[in-house]
Length: 364
Ligand code: GDP
Image 1 (cartoon, protein in one colour):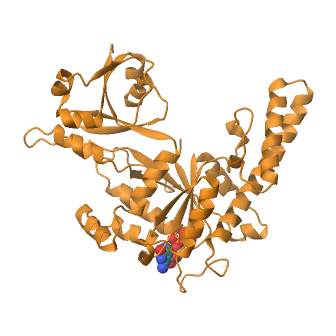
Image 2 (image 1 turned 45 degrees about the vertical axis):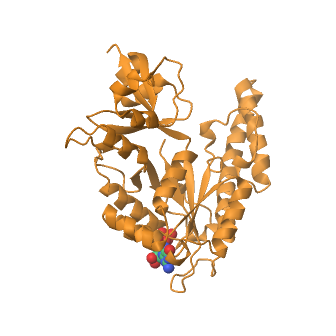
């Protein structure tokens, strides 16, 4: 998947947030790939389990390096200013947003007379409706075209086309009521090539000034209420503060957050919520060489997880030694964990759990 797309009206703080994301990504240690597209940023997923395990596998002064896993954010620029006045969404915008797996919708919840608001006043619910309406209209336009083609094919007694046409009609009915596609329940799986934007899970990012980080202002409260009705998540951040944090060494950043009265940076929260929204979980490989997190989808099996490490490991998978991360910390290493009987042997059907440590036994 291509990660999470950042959208929002102009002047709500998208670029400020995206810049913080790319800077945070650039600072992340051990990042093995150099070239990323300019509109894509990666942020490491904060994971305290890794540092605990790194301590377990420290031998003398040899501390195993920690390799975290990442979430990708895509800056989906080009939501044209006139979109809400009926000029529609640009093609580039639509192409980009159709590729991501989830949407982070940045909503302005800060008051600042120096920053012009496109609609003249700060009103997050109005902003949310404006964008949601555009996305719903874009989905309707795309799906109506698709439906015409399917109906033509269905006349030729194409059973699959007929079923898809029925599904498209069900979705169009939901969209026609002004609701996002995700609000409906449908018979049958929605084909990817329907290209629906509003079926993707959404996270509302409430961008506030630094004074509103500890307590929700009225705008944030309104966004939370709205999101709760949709079953969507809300992450409150200050994009400006995130930009400053991304420039600081870790220790200084922690102190800065502490002085602001918050536990965790907004970006860290966004990464965690994003990871969860994408349906991702982490498994870990760990030893004296390195402690490393890997990303898989919920429901994936041990061989599929092994394939994430290397395709050979999936093909040559025999079985896996698995232990929960906290048991490993308690045991203090593989040998002791085994003698306590805490390391299980799992076969090809084992469904991985978040926080599993795995050692793959293979015939490669
Ligand atoms: P974009 O058009 O959505 O990408 O918005 P920008 O990131 O360019 O931000 C628009 C303006 O709002 C810039 O001048 C930012 O410095 C300012 N801005 C962004 N976040 C905040 C914030 O939390 N508080 C205040 N006061 N200004 C902000």
